[in-house]
Length: 511
Image (cartoon, rainbow, N blue to C red):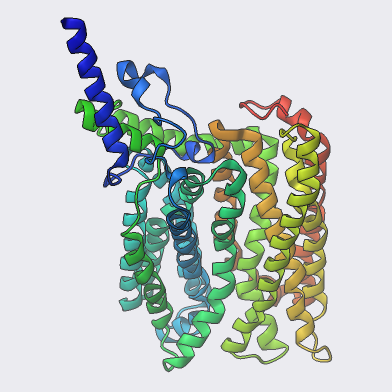
């Protein structure tokens, strides 16, 4: 009789779990950003309930990878749209700088600080958001970061002093950028490893597309509203508010959180208490310390982070150099300067095309040759190409601006620059994920982000000074020579990557 009762209870328990899988998704989510890079089962140390913390089957309807395709596309678009509105907020402010200088009677160095500190906030936001998402989930991060961005941007737009503008812009960048830490994880929750690369393309493009379109957007809307610089803030709210409303229909995608809440409904408790302050502090420490440690002890992480950080920061230097060059040499107004960034956008298109071509040809060939497990170095083909054309674009822009040369010539220099910088970024990011895999891949990418946005915050502070002191040609050449000196980085890793992986302090791919 006792055995029968136990069996009945077990059957009832399984029905409860199945019912939960068919129910609506829970309101909050718990996430592990590293899990976002590659799905994994929960460890067996979670006690007697561990056997229930997995999908019931390959067709479990609670698994986001089994959602209808339209639903998966919707949840894939949200991180890309969030990333776009957050990053367009960097450069949409650029056309407002002359108006800030005039209204508040400050030097350009002060007027640039709302741009630099907004970008610097991108270092803080993701480092906090990733550990917090492990406690409270991916979806709640989306629901809190964009409102913070819009709130602080609104206060910045209404500010009556340059000091308040600077502080609010920093808080907008720090509060809004948390999404950058979890977007890749959301996409990996939804798609298989085979499909996640294509699905992530929009999210990967956002950090480049936003800054490239910002100057054009800001220039036109400020001009449309009688040179009122505050519209460079209002336009971020206009773009972001509909995205926030759309995101309210999101459901949780994290496997860990879905299964833990499934178990919570059954047993009334969740393994690892959500309010465990010690656990949160551990995760915060890991989120801060591990990326920095990897940057210093892992050559693959350190040098690729410096390289991608430099190429990304060059776009931020263009916020100053494009304005200076096209005003001084060609007498362009702010709207015309914004249009010059379209050359970079064309380069981005070529970067995506070339990465895709390498993916379906050389990488696919290497995969077939290695029985589905190619060496991570085969991800570097696009970076090899990018390393050659990046300095080409920078030298082109350095030496072609001249009153006797048509303005389209330096504008076209943006094509090889955009092509090279994005190709290097996509290739290096996928390479780091393949090398360090689920266990440490997120930290490697986080280290990459630290230098990327750190350089992006610093470069606008000295670019104009360089151009004034050295002249257009030689100031531009300094950046080009740096790119030329860094050109061997992906080639060396393609050649010696396997031996460097073998000497790593972290678990790496053995392929």
